[in-house]
Image 1 (cartoon, rainbow, N blue to C red):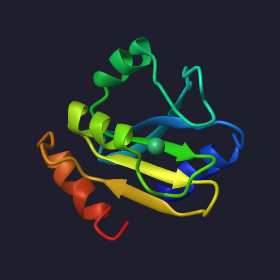
Image 2: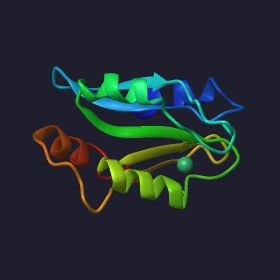
Image 3: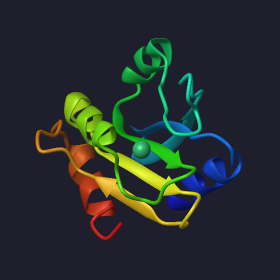
Image 4: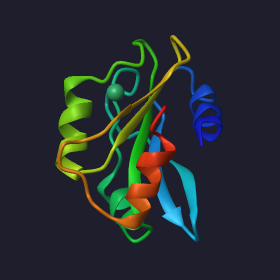
Length: 122
Ligand SMILES: [Zn+2]
């Protein structure tokens, strides 16, 4: 999973990459979405249309990259993660590190339990 995220993010060195981790047929799948933010170098935004189409696919987490900052989550990252109640993953192109943010109120499911185990030492 980390490797898939790195490949997607390293492919876009000048803007934040973003997408979803879904759980399908007992596997965690990493899928890239278009970043529609007006400020894609320091922010990301996934379209409502993409969000809706992925809702059917059992969203487990959101991933994105940081271009100009390290692997520390912004206040907005934390806020959005809490709002949609799924973890946020980040990969920093600057320090090449991964990080995970787990919201206080998390959507509970068997797949989420599995995911939390998987990222325990992320
Ligand atoms: Zn961020």
